[in-house]
Length: 469
Ligand code: HEC
Ligand code: HEC
Picture 1 (cartoon, rainbow, N blue to C red):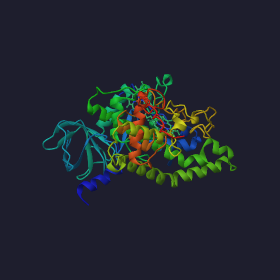
Picture 2 (cartoon, rainbow, N blue to C red):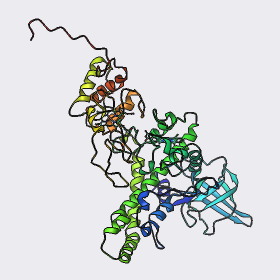
Picture 3 (cartoon, protein in one colour):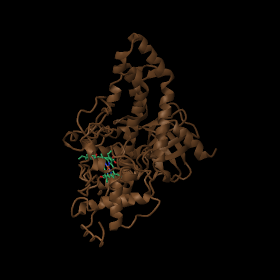
Picture 4 (cartoon, rainbow, N blue to C red):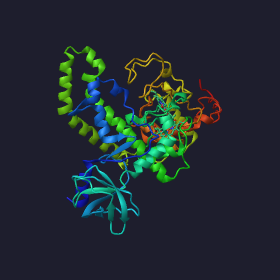
Protein backbone atom coordinates (compact mmCIF):
# COMPACT_ATOMS: atom_id res chain seq x y z
CA UNK A 1 0.00 0.00 0.00
CA UNK A 2 1.40 3.43 -0.86
CA UNK A 3 2.09 5.92 1.87
CA UNK A 4 -0.70 8.22 0.75
CA UNK A 5 -3.22 5.41 0.76
CA UNK A 6 -2.20 4.18 4.18
CA UNK A 7 -2.64 7.64 5.57
CA UNK A 8 -6.00 7.96 3.99
CA UNK A 9 -7.31 4.87 5.67
CA UNK A 10 -6.02 6.09 9.00
CA UNK A 11 -7.72 9.38 8.45
CA UNK A 12 -10.97 7.65 7.69
CA UNK A 13 -11.33 6.17 11.12
CA UNK A 14 -10.92 9.28 13.20
CA UNK A 15 -12.69 12.46 14.04
CA UNK A 16 -10.94 15.59 15.12
CA UNK A 17 -12.38 18.21 17.35
CA UNK A 18 -12.26 21.91 16.51
CA UNK A 19 -12.97 24.40 19.18
CA UNK A 20 -14.88 27.45 18.14
CA UNK A 21 -14.55 30.18 20.71
CA UNK A 22 -17.60 32.15 19.59
CA UNK A 23 -20.36 32.58 22.08
CA UNK A 24 -23.11 34.19 20.03
CA UNK A 25 -24.13 30.98 18.28
CA UNK A 26 -26.80 28.54 19.35
CA UNK A 27 -25.07 26.14 21.65
CA UNK A 28 -26.67 23.01 20.29
CA UNK A 29 -27.94 21.59 17.03
CA UNK A 30 -31.64 20.80 16.99
CA UNK A 31 -32.54 17.13 16.70
CA UNK A 32 -35.14 15.93 14.22
CA UNK A 33 -38.70 15.48 15.39
CA UNK A 34 -38.26 11.86 14.40
CA UNK A 35 -35.59 11.59 17.10
CA UNK A 36 -37.67 13.30 19.75
CA UNK A 37 -40.56 10.99 18.87
CA UNK A 38 -38.47 8.04 20.11
CA UNK A 39 -38.76 6.81 23.68
CA UNK A 40 -36.30 8.78 25.85
CA UNK A 41 -33.96 5.81 26.35
CA UNK A 42 -33.54 5.43 22.59
CA UNK A 43 -32.72 9.14 22.27
CA UNK A 44 -30.31 9.32 25.18
CA UNK A 45 -29.01 5.75 25.33
CA UNK A 46 -27.16 4.25 28.28
CA UNK A 47 -23.70 4.81 29.65
CA UNK A 48 -22.12 2.00 27.63
CA UNK A 49 -24.59 2.08 24.74
CA UNK A 50 -25.10 5.51 23.17
CA UNK A 51 -28.50 6.49 21.77
CA UNK A 52 -29.18 8.52 18.65
CA UNK A 53 -28.25 11.92 20.12
CA UNK A 54 -24.82 10.88 21.36
CA UNK A 55 -24.03 8.92 18.21
CA UNK A 56 -24.72 12.01 16.12
CA UNK A 57 -22.86 14.39 18.45
CA UNK A 58 -19.83 12.09 18.55
CA UNK A 59 -19.35 12.54 14.83
CA UNK A 60 -20.57 16.08 14.21
CA UNK A 61 -20.27 17.89 17.53
CA UNK A 62 -22.17 21.09 18.13
CA UNK A 63 -21.97 24.65 16.84
CA UNK A 64 -19.50 25.59 19.60
CA UNK A 65 -17.44 22.49 19.12
CA UNK A 66 -17.76 21.16 15.61
CA UNK A 67 -16.25 17.84 14.73
CA UNK A 68 -14.83 16.82 11.39
CA UNK A 69 -15.62 13.21 10.61
CA UNK A 70 -12.85 12.74 8.13
CA UNK A 71 -14.40 9.87 6.27
CA UNK A 72 -17.04 12.21 4.90
CA UNK A 73 -16.47 13.94 1.56
CA UNK A 74 -16.49 17.41 3.10
CA UNK A 75 -13.53 19.76 2.69
CA UNK A 76 -13.01 20.55 6.35
CA UNK A 77 -9.85 22.46 5.54
CA UNK A 78 -6.29 21.88 6.69
CA UNK A 79 -3.12 20.42 5.19
CA UNK A 80 -2.47 16.74 5.76
CA UNK A 81 0.95 15.84 7.12
CA UNK A 82 2.72 13.19 9.16
CA UNK A 83 4.84 13.60 12.25
CA UNK A 84 8.51 13.30 11.30
CA UNK A 85 10.67 13.96 14.33
CA UNK A 86 9.81 15.08 17.86
CA UNK A 87 12.15 17.16 20.01
CA UNK A 88 10.72 17.77 23.46
CA UNK A 89 12.38 20.36 25.70
CA UNK A 90 11.55 22.30 28.82
CA UNK A 91 9.78 25.10 26.97
CA UNK A 92 7.34 22.86 25.10
CA UNK A 93 7.99 20.68 22.11
CA UNK A 94 9.15 20.96 18.57
CA UNK A 95 7.64 18.69 15.98
CA UNK A 96 8.93 18.36 12.48
CA UNK A 97 6.12 17.71 10.04
CA UNK A 98 6.30 16.05 6.67
CA UNK A 99 3.65 17.08 4.17
CA UNK A 100 1.66 14.29 2.58
CA UNK A 101 2.43 13.84 -1.11
CA UNK A 102 0.75 16.51 -3.20
CA UNK A 103 0.14 18.84 -0.22
CA UNK A 104 1.99 22.11 0.38
CA UNK A 105 2.29 23.22 3.97
CA UNK A 106 0.74 26.65 4.59
CA UNK A 107 2.76 29.86 5.03
CA UNK A 108 1.35 30.42 8.48
CA UNK A 109 -0.17 27.93 10.90
CA UNK A 110 -2.07 28.30 14.15
CA UNK A 111 -2.93 24.79 15.27
CA UNK A 112 -2.11 21.14 14.80
CA UNK A 113 -4.63 18.31 15.00
CA UNK A 114 -3.57 14.73 15.47
CA UNK A 115 -5.54 12.36 13.31
CA UNK A 116 -4.08 8.95 14.14
CA UNK A 117 -2.02 7.37 16.91
CA UNK A 118 -2.26 7.88 20.67
CA UNK A 119 -3.03 11.60 20.39
CA UNK A 120 -5.76 11.17 17.72
CA UNK A 121 -8.51 13.73 18.05
CA UNK A 122 -6.40 16.21 20.04
CA UNK A 123 -5.65 19.72 18.94
CA UNK A 124 -2.70 21.84 20.10
CA UNK A 125 -1.67 25.43 19.42
CA UNK A 126 1.37 26.22 17.27
CA UNK A 127 3.45 29.06 18.76
CA UNK A 128 6.12 29.22 16.07
CA UNK A 129 6.07 27.85 12.56
CA UNK A 130 8.64 27.39 9.83
CA UNK A 131 6.88 26.58 6.57
CA UNK A 132 10.16 25.72 4.80
CA UNK A 133 11.30 23.01 7.18
CA UNK A 134 7.88 22.06 8.52
CA UNK A 135 9.07 22.71 12.05
CA UNK A 136 6.26 23.56 14.46
CA UNK A 137 6.78 24.68 18.03
CA UNK A 138 3.80 23.50 20.04
CA UNK A 139 2.32 25.19 23.08
CA UNK A 140 2.40 21.77 24.73
CA UNK A 141 2.70 18.15 23.77
CA UNK A 142 -0.46 16.03 24.20
CA UNK A 143 -0.26 13.79 27.23
CA UNK A 144 -0.59 10.68 25.13
CA UNK A 145 2.46 11.58 23.09
CA UNK A 146 2.37 11.34 19.30
CA UNK A 147 5.13 9.36 17.61
CA UNK A 148 6.81 9.63 14.22
CA UNK A 149 4.49 8.48 11.46
CA UNK A 150 1.25 9.65 13.11
CA UNK A 151 -1.08 11.46 10.74
CA UNK A 152 -1.97 15.04 11.54
CA UNK A 153 -3.52 18.11 10.00
CA UNK A 154 -2.21 21.69 10.05
CA UNK A 155 -5.02 24.16 10.74
CA UNK A 156 -7.52 21.34 10.24
CA UNK A 157 -11.14 22.42 10.12
CA UNK A 158 -10.45 26.02 9.07
CA UNK A 159 -12.82 25.80 6.09
CA UNK A 160 -15.62 24.38 8.20
CA UNK A 161 -15.16 27.06 10.84
CA UNK A 162 -15.21 29.81 8.22
CA UNK A 163 -18.27 28.20 6.64
CA UNK A 164 -20.09 28.22 9.94
CA UNK A 165 -19.32 31.87 10.65
CA UNK A 166 -20.61 32.91 7.20
CA UNK A 167 -23.60 30.59 7.40
CA UNK A 168 -24.64 32.00 10.77
CA UNK A 169 -24.41 35.52 9.37
CA UNK A 170 -26.10 35.04 6.00
CA UNK A 171 -28.26 31.92 6.10
CA UNK A 172 -29.28 30.90 9.60
CA UNK A 173 -32.05 33.47 10.03
CA UNK A 174 -33.93 31.63 7.29
CA UNK A 175 -32.47 28.10 7.28
CA UNK A 176 -31.84 27.80 11.05
CA UNK A 177 -28.49 27.01 12.71
CA UNK A 178 -29.05 23.30 12.21
CA UNK A 179 -30.27 23.61 8.60
CA UNK A 180 -33.79 22.69 9.67
CA UNK A 181 -35.34 25.50 7.61
CA UNK A 182 -36.74 27.00 10.76
CA UNK A 183 -34.84 30.21 11.41
CA UNK A 184 -36.67 33.23 12.88
CA UNK A 185 -37.60 34.63 9.44
CA UNK A 186 -38.86 31.30 8.07
CA UNK A 187 -42.43 31.53 9.34
CA UNK A 188 -43.12 34.54 7.10
CA UNK A 189 -41.96 32.91 3.88
CA UNK A 190 -43.73 30.89 1.19
CA UNK A 191 -42.21 28.65 -0.03
CA UNK A 192 -40.44 27.99 3.22
CA UNK A 193 -36.63 27.94 3.38
CA UNK A 194 -35.36 24.45 2.73
CA UNK A 195 -34.85 22.02 5.57
CA UNK A 196 -31.85 20.15 4.19
CA UNK A 197 -31.48 17.65 7.01
CA UNK A 198 -32.93 14.90 4.84
CA UNK A 199 -30.14 15.33 2.27
CA UNK A 200 -32.63 16.19 -0.48
CA UNK A 201 -32.05 19.16 -2.80
CA UNK A 202 -34.50 20.08 -5.53
CA UNK A 203 -32.54 21.72 -8.30
CA UNK A 204 -29.69 19.47 -9.32
CA UNK A 205 -27.79 18.62 -12.48
CA UNK A 206 -27.45 15.04 -11.29
CA UNK A 207 -29.52 11.94 -12.08
CA UNK A 208 -32.78 11.36 -10.29
CA UNK A 209 -31.26 8.92 -7.78
CA UNK A 210 -28.07 10.92 -7.14
CA UNK A 211 -27.42 13.53 -4.48
CA UNK A 212 -26.79 17.19 -5.17
CA UNK A 213 -23.32 18.14 -6.45
CA UNK A 214 -21.08 20.87 -5.10
CA UNK A 215 -21.64 22.81 -8.33
CA UNK A 216 -25.41 22.66 -7.86
CA UNK A 217 -25.29 24.16 -4.38
CA UNK A 218 -22.79 26.75 -5.62
CA UNK A 219 -25.15 27.76 -8.44
CA UNK A 220 -28.07 28.16 -6.04
CA UNK A 221 -25.91 30.37 -3.80
CA UNK A 222 -24.65 32.51 -6.65
CA UNK A 223 -27.97 33.05 -8.42
CA UNK A 224 -30.55 32.45 -5.69
CA UNK A 225 -33.87 30.81 -6.50
CA UNK A 226 -35.97 33.13 -8.72
CA UNK A 227 -39.54 33.55 -7.57
CA UNK A 228 -38.70 32.70 -3.95
CA UNK A 229 -37.06 34.48 -1.02
CA UNK A 230 -33.80 32.60 -1.53
CA UNK A 231 -31.40 35.47 -2.31
CA UNK A 232 -28.36 35.58 -4.58
CA UNK A 233 -24.90 35.77 -3.00
CA UNK A 234 -23.10 36.62 -6.21
CA UNK A 235 -20.94 39.24 -4.52
CA UNK A 236 -19.23 36.78 -2.21
CA UNK A 237 -15.66 35.64 -2.80
CA UNK A 238 -15.35 32.19 -4.31
CA UNK A 239 -13.49 31.00 -1.21
CA UNK A 240 -16.40 32.17 0.96
CA UNK A 241 -18.94 30.40 -1.23
CA UNK A 242 -16.80 27.27 -1.07
CA UNK A 243 -16.73 27.37 2.74
CA UNK A 244 -20.52 27.81 2.93
CA UNK A 245 -21.13 25.00 0.44
CA UNK A 246 -19.01 22.67 2.59
CA UNK A 247 -20.92 23.73 5.69
CA UNK A 248 -24.28 23.08 4.01
CA UNK A 249 -23.01 19.62 3.03
CA UNK A 250 -21.88 19.06 6.62
CA UNK A 251 -25.29 20.02 8.05
CA UNK A 252 -27.11 18.03 5.44
CA UNK A 253 -25.09 14.85 5.98
CA UNK A 254 -25.45 15.28 9.73
CA UNK A 255 -29.23 15.40 9.38
CA UNK A 256 -29.34 12.43 7.09
CA UNK A 257 -27.09 10.38 9.37
CA UNK A 258 -29.46 11.13 12.24
CA UNK A 259 -32.48 10.02 10.18
CA UNK A 260 -30.74 6.79 9.24
CA UNK A 261 -30.04 6.01 12.89
CA UNK A 262 -33.61 6.83 13.88
CA UNK A 263 -34.89 4.52 11.15
CA UNK A 264 -33.21 1.63 12.99
CA UNK A 265 -35.28 2.36 16.09
CA UNK A 266 -38.62 3.82 15.03
CA UNK A 267 -40.36 0.51 14.38
CA UNK A 268 -39.88 -0.83 17.92
CA UNK A 269 -38.85 2.05 20.14
CA UNK A 270 -40.83 5.14 19.21
CA UNK A 271 -43.31 6.45 21.76
CA UNK A 272 -46.04 5.31 19.39
CA UNK A 273 -44.60 1.81 18.95
CA UNK A 274 -44.40 1.53 22.72
CA UNK A 275 -48.15 2.03 23.06
CA UNK A 276 -48.87 -0.99 20.91
CA UNK A 277 -46.34 -3.35 22.50
CA UNK A 278 -47.48 -5.98 24.99
CA UNK A 279 -44.25 -6.49 26.97
CA UNK A 280 -43.42 -4.72 30.22
CA UNK A 281 -41.59 -1.46 29.78
CA UNK A 282 -38.55 -2.77 31.67
CA UNK A 283 -38.28 -5.67 29.25
CA UNK A 284 -38.44 -3.34 26.29
CA UNK A 285 -35.74 -1.16 27.83
CA UNK A 286 -33.47 -4.20 28.30
CA UNK A 287 -34.06 -5.23 24.73
CA UNK A 288 -33.29 -1.70 23.51
CA UNK A 289 -30.10 -1.60 25.54
CA UNK A 290 -28.96 -4.84 23.96
CA UNK A 291 -29.80 -3.52 20.51
CA UNK A 292 -27.94 -0.25 21.05
CA UNK A 293 -24.92 -2.12 22.31
CA UNK A 294 -24.75 -4.96 19.83
CA UNK A 295 -26.39 -3.84 16.60
CA UNK A 296 -26.30 -0.06 16.56
CA UNK A 297 -22.52 0.42 16.17
CA UNK A 298 -22.53 -1.63 12.98
CA UNK A 299 -25.61 0.16 11.67
CA UNK A 300 -24.00 3.52 12.41
CA UNK A 301 -20.81 2.58 10.57
CA UNK A 302 -22.87 1.34 7.64
CA UNK A 303 -24.87 4.57 7.55
CA UNK A 304 -21.68 6.67 7.54
CA UNK A 305 -20.13 4.57 4.77
CA UNK A 306 -23.23 4.80 2.64
CA UNK A 307 -23.45 8.57 3.01
CA UNK A 308 -19.75 9.02 2.25
CA UNK A 309 -20.20 6.98 -0.90
CA UNK A 310 -23.35 8.75 -2.13
CA UNK A 311 -22.09 12.27 -1.49
CA UNK A 312 -18.82 11.44 -3.21
CA UNK A 313 -20.56 9.86 -6.20
CA UNK A 314 -22.69 12.98 -6.78
CA UNK A 315 -19.59 14.90 -7.88
CA UNK A 316 -18.50 12.38 -10.50
CA UNK A 317 -19.17 12.45 -14.25
CA UNK A 318 -21.40 9.37 -13.97
CA UNK A 319 -23.89 11.23 -11.81
CA UNK A 320 -24.26 14.15 -14.21
CA UNK A 321 -27.08 14.42 -16.71
CA UNK A 322 -25.52 14.78 -20.13
CA UNK A 323 -27.92 15.01 -23.08
CA UNK A 324 -27.02 12.46 -25.75
CA UNK A 325 -27.97 14.90 -28.50
CA UNK A 326 -27.44 18.67 -28.68
CA UNK A 327 -30.41 20.95 -28.23
CA UNK A 328 -32.89 20.60 -31.06
CA UNK A 329 -33.25 23.96 -32.88
CA UNK A 330 -36.07 26.00 -31.39
CA UNK A 331 -38.45 26.00 -34.35
CA UNK A 332 -42.21 26.22 -34.59
CA UNK A 333 -42.28 22.53 -35.46
CA UNK A 334 -40.19 21.59 -32.45
CA UNK A 335 -42.46 23.59 -30.11
CA UNK A 336 -45.52 21.90 -31.53
CA UNK A 337 -43.92 18.50 -31.07
CA UNK A 338 -43.10 19.50 -27.51
CA UNK A 339 -46.69 20.50 -26.89
CA UNK A 340 -47.96 17.17 -28.26
CA UNK A 341 -45.64 15.31 -25.91
CA UNK A 342 -46.73 17.60 -23.07
CA UNK A 343 -50.36 16.70 -23.66
CA UNK A 344 -49.70 13.02 -24.49
CA UNK A 345 -51.16 10.26 -22.34
CA UNK A 346 -47.67 8.84 -21.66
CA UNK A 347 -46.06 11.98 -20.26
CA UNK A 348 -49.21 13.80 -19.23
CA UNK A 349 -47.58 16.99 -17.98
CA UNK A 350 -51.01 18.58 -18.31
CA UNK A 351 -52.39 16.37 -15.54
CA UNK A 352 -50.44 18.58 -13.12
CA UNK A 353 -49.52 21.73 -15.05
CA UNK A 354 -52.86 22.11 -16.87
CA UNK A 355 -53.45 22.00 -20.62
CA UNK A 356 -52.10 25.51 -21.08
CA UNK A 357 -49.35 25.35 -18.44
CA UNK A 358 -51.10 27.53 -15.89
CA UNK A 359 -50.26 25.09 -13.08
CA UNK A 360 -53.89 24.12 -12.57
CA UNK A 361 -54.18 20.50 -13.79
CA UNK A 362 -56.65 18.00 -12.30
CA UNK A 363 -54.06 16.74 -9.78
CA UNK A 364 -54.07 20.13 -8.06
CA UNK A 365 -57.71 19.56 -7.16
CA UNK A 366 -57.55 15.87 -6.21
CA UNK A 367 -56.91 14.59 -2.69
CA UNK A 368 -53.57 12.81 -2.42
CA UNK A 369 -53.69 9.43 -0.73
CA UNK A 370 -50.54 10.14 1.25
CA UNK A 371 -49.59 11.03 4.81
CA UNK A 372 -47.42 13.81 6.23
CA UNK A 373 -43.85 12.44 6.56
CA UNK A 374 -43.52 13.29 10.25
CA UNK A 375 -46.97 13.47 11.78
CA UNK A 376 -48.21 10.48 9.74
CA UNK A 377 -51.59 12.23 9.37
CA UNK A 378 -53.31 11.89 5.97
CA UNK A 379 -53.54 15.16 4.03
CA UNK A 380 -56.94 16.74 4.35
CA UNK A 381 -56.38 19.47 1.73
CA UNK A 382 -56.49 18.82 -2.02
CA UNK A 383 -53.30 19.05 -4.08
CA UNK A 384 -49.79 17.59 -4.19
CA UNK A 385 -47.26 17.61 -1.34
CA UNK A 386 -43.48 17.47 -1.20
CA UNK A 387 -41.11 15.37 0.93
CA UNK A 388 -41.26 18.00 3.69
CA UNK A 389 -45.07 17.81 3.92
CA UNK A 390 -45.62 21.21 2.28
CA UNK A 391 -48.31 21.83 -0.32
CA UNK A 392 -46.46 21.57 -3.63
CA UNK A 393 -48.17 23.34 -6.52
CA UNK A 394 -47.05 22.46 -10.03
CA UNK A 395 -45.32 25.50 -11.50
CA UNK A 396 -47.32 27.99 -13.53
CA UNK A 397 -45.29 27.73 -16.72
CA UNK A 398 -46.88 30.87 -18.20
CA UNK A 399 -44.84 33.14 -15.92
CA UNK A 400 -41.49 32.13 -17.41
CA UNK A 401 -39.94 32.05 -13.94
CA UNK A 402 -37.95 28.89 -13.37
CA UNK A 403 -36.58 28.26 -9.91
CA UNK A 404 -33.84 25.92 -11.03
CA UNK A 405 -32.59 28.28 -13.73
CA UNK A 406 -33.89 29.26 -17.16
CA UNK A 407 -31.11 27.98 -19.42
CA UNK A 408 -32.34 25.21 -21.76
CA UNK A 409 -29.97 22.76 -20.06
CA UNK A 410 -31.51 23.63 -16.66
CA UNK A 411 -34.95 22.70 -17.95
CA UNK A 412 -33.56 19.57 -19.57
CA UNK A 413 -32.26 18.48 -16.15
CA UNK A 414 -35.57 19.36 -14.42
CA UNK A 415 -37.50 17.15 -16.83
CA UNK A 416 -34.90 14.35 -16.94
CA UNK A 417 -34.41 14.03 -13.17
CA UNK A 418 -37.65 15.56 -11.98
CA UNK A 419 -37.48 17.90 -9.00
CA UNK A 420 -36.18 15.83 -6.11
CA UNK A 421 -38.34 15.73 -3.03
CA UNK A 422 -41.22 17.33 -4.96
CA UNK A 423 -44.19 15.90 -6.84
CA UNK A 424 -42.53 16.67 -10.20
CA UNK A 425 -41.51 13.19 -11.43
CA UNK A 426 -38.46 12.14 -13.43
CA UNK A 427 -38.90 11.56 -17.16
CA UNK A 428 -35.53 9.88 -17.59
CA UNK A 429 -36.90 7.24 -19.94
CA UNK A 430 -38.04 9.82 -22.47
CA UNK A 431 -35.83 10.15 -25.57
CA UNK A 432 -33.43 13.08 -25.17
CA UNK A 433 -34.53 14.56 -28.47
CA UNK A 434 -38.11 14.58 -27.20
CA UNK A 435 -37.03 16.24 -23.95
CA UNK A 436 -35.48 19.04 -26.04
CA UNK A 437 -38.76 19.48 -27.93
CA UNK A 438 -40.54 19.81 -24.61
CA UNK A 439 -37.92 22.30 -23.39
CA UNK A 440 -38.48 24.40 -26.50
CA UNK A 441 -42.22 24.30 -25.88
CA UNK A 442 -41.97 25.09 -22.15
CA UNK A 443 -39.67 28.06 -22.81
CA UNK A 444 -42.14 29.41 -25.37
CA UNK A 445 -45.28 29.27 -23.22
CA UNK A 446 -44.64 32.71 -21.73
CA UNK A 447 -44.67 34.26 -25.20
CA UNK A 448 -47.81 32.62 -26.48
CA UNK A 449 -50.22 34.93 -28.23
CA UNK A 450 -53.05 32.82 -26.91
CA UNK A 451 -53.09 29.78 -24.61
CA UNK A 452 -52.04 26.59 -26.37
CA UNK A 453 -50.67 28.28 -29.49
CA UNK A 454 -47.27 26.74 -28.76
CA UNK A 455 -45.51 30.06 -28.69
CA UNK A 456 -46.22 30.97 -32.29
CA UNK A 457 -48.81 33.24 -33.77
CA UNK A 458 -51.95 31.31 -34.62
CA UNK A 459 -51.37 29.97 -38.10
CA UNK A 460 -54.07 30.54 -40.67
CA UNK A 461 -56.09 27.38 -41.12
CA UNK A 462 -55.22 26.02 -44.55
CA UNK A 463 -58.15 26.23 -46.92
CA UNK A 464 -59.68 22.79 -47.47
CA UNK A 465 -58.69 21.29 -50.75
CA UNK A 466 -61.36 21.30 -53.38
CA UNK A 467 -63.61 18.29 -53.07
CA UNK A 468 -62.59 17.55 -49.44
CA UNK A 469 -65.40 16.78 -47.01
C1 HEC B 1 -34.53 35.26 3.15
C2 HEC B 1 -34.47 33.86 3.41
C3 HEC B 1 -33.30 33.04 2.91
C4 HEC B 1 -31.96 33.27 3.12
C5 HEC B 1 -31.29 34.44 3.83
C6 HEC B 1 -31.26 32.15 2.54
N1 HEC B 1 -32.15 31.29 2.00
FE1 HEC B 1 -31.71 29.51 1.07
N2 HEC B 1 -33.66 29.24 0.64
C7 HEC B 1 -34.69 30.06 1.01
C8 HEC B 1 -35.94 29.56 0.48
C9 HEC B 1 -37.30 30.20 0.67
C10 HEC B 1 -35.62 28.37 -0.22
C11 HEC B 1 -36.59 27.40 -0.88
C12 HEC B 1 -36.99 27.73 -2.28
C13 HEC B 1 -37.84 26.63 -2.88
O1 HEC B 1 -38.40 25.81 -2.17
O2 HEC B 1 -37.90 26.59 -4.09
C14 HEC B 1 -34.18 28.20 -0.08
C15 HEC B 1 -33.50 27.13 -0.63
C16 HEC B 1 -32.15 26.90 -0.44
C17 HEC B 1 -31.44 25.73 -0.91
C18 HEC B 1 -32.05 24.55 -1.64
C19 HEC B 1 -31.75 24.47 -3.11
C20 HEC B 1 -32.29 23.23 -3.73
O3 HEC B 1 -31.86 22.90 -4.84
O4 HEC B 1 -33.12 22.54 -3.14
C21 HEC B 1 -30.14 25.86 -0.49
C22 HEC B 1 -29.01 24.90 -0.72
C23 HEC B 1 -30.05 27.12 0.21
N3 HEC B 1 -31.27 27.73 0.22
C24 HEC B 1 -28.90 27.59 0.81
C25 HEC B 1 -28.80 28.83 1.41
C26 HEC B 1 -27.56 29.33 1.97
C27 HEC B 1 -26.27 28.57 2.04
C28 HEC B 1 -27.81 30.59 2.41
C29 HEC B 1 -26.85 31.59 3.00
C30 HEC B 1 -25.67 31.89 2.22
C31 HEC B 1 -29.23 30.84 2.19
N4 HEC B 1 -29.78 29.75 1.58
C32 HEC B 1 -29.89 31.99 2.57
C33 HEC B 1 -34.58 31.22 1.75
C34 HEC B 1 -33.41 31.79 2.19
C1 HEC C 1 -47.40 14.70 -10.79
C2 HEC C 1 -47.38 16.09 -11.12
C3 HEC C 1 -46.43 16.61 -12.16
C4 HEC C 1 -46.25 16.14 -13.43
C5 HEC C 1 -46.85 14.91 -14.09
C6 HEC C 1 -45.31 17.05 -14.04
N1 HEC C 1 -44.95 18.04 -13.18
FE1 HEC C 1 -43.70 19.56 -13.55
N2 HEC C 1 -43.85 20.19 -11.64
C7 HEC C 1 -44.67 19.64 -10.69
C8 HEC C 1 -44.49 20.31 -9.44
C9 HEC C 1 -45.20 20.01 -8.15
C10 HEC C 1 -43.54 21.32 -9.66
C11 HEC C 1 -42.97 22.29 -8.64
C12 HEC C 1 -41.87 21.60 -7.82
C13 HEC C 1 -41.18 22.45 -6.81
O1 HEC C 1 -40.53 23.43 -7.19
O2 HEC C 1 -41.24 22.14 -5.64
C14 HEC C 1 -43.17 21.21 -11.05
C15 HEC C 1 -42.26 22.06 -11.67
C16 HEC C 1 -42.00 22.04 -13.02
C17 HEC C 1 -41.17 23.01 -13.71
C18 HEC C 1 -40.48 24.19 -13.09
C19 HEC C 1 -38.97 24.07 -13.06
C20 HEC C 1 -38.32 25.24 -12.38
O3 HEC C 1 -37.10 25.34 -12.48
O4 HEC C 1 -39.02 26.06 -11.76
C21 HEC C 1 -41.20 22.68 -15.03
C22 HEC C 1 -40.50 23.40 -16.17
C23 HEC C 1 -42.00 21.51 -15.17
N3 HEC C 1 -42.48 21.14 -13.93
C24 HEC C 1 -42.26 20.87 -16.37
C25 HEC C 1 -42.95 19.67 -16.47
C26 HEC C 1 -43.08 18.93 -17.70
C27 HEC C 1 -42.53 19.38 -19.04
C28 HEC C 1 -43.77 17.80 -17.41
C29 HEC C 1 -44.09 16.63 -18.32
C30 HEC C 1 -42.98 16.08 -19.09
C31 HEC C 1 -44.12 17.86 -16.00
N4 HEC C 1 -43.59 19.01 -15.47
C32 HEC C 1 -44.85 16.92 -15.34
C33 HEC C 1 -45.52 18.58 -10.87
C34 HEC C 1 -45.62 17.80 -12.01
